[in-house]
Length: 156
Ligand SMILES: Nc1c(C(=O)O)ncn1[C@@H]1O[C@H](COP(=O)(O)O)[C@@H](O)[C@H]1O
Image (cartoon, rainbow, N blue to C red; front, top):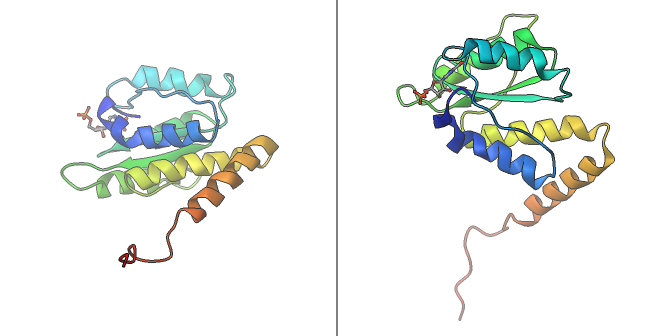
């Protein structure tokens, strides 16, 4: 993520990966403020065996696109909600990549962070039966937890 201030959003991605038993690391790396750290991180990603990079940033969110430009590892971009423009700036910055440098872009904020983690899990599940089973169980639990009534009926 681009800043520690993104962690309240990006921790939802971390929590989801943890719930699915998928090892991950969380790092602050900024295209603007720590450009060399970003280049080093992205260049090392494939050699370190990273399967995906979930990049969350807000405002002028150049981080996901710049990381995607530097590594062949799939980049999943999460637009973090910004104070001034409610994350629409982040969304547009991440989604409007030029042809040839893809970033898979998710919804603004918490839902996007969760879905990026679930999407990464789905990619891994293609070749990992254990992750596939845990993802299936997660989805079943989600379905089971959706009540079919809008509120509890009053008890007599
Ligand atoms: N968009 C980027 C990048 C980047 O794209 O590299 N680095 C930091 N930021 C964003 O700036 C916002 C405000 O950061 P601060 O709260 O630290 O001022 C954060 O949402 C961060 O992702």
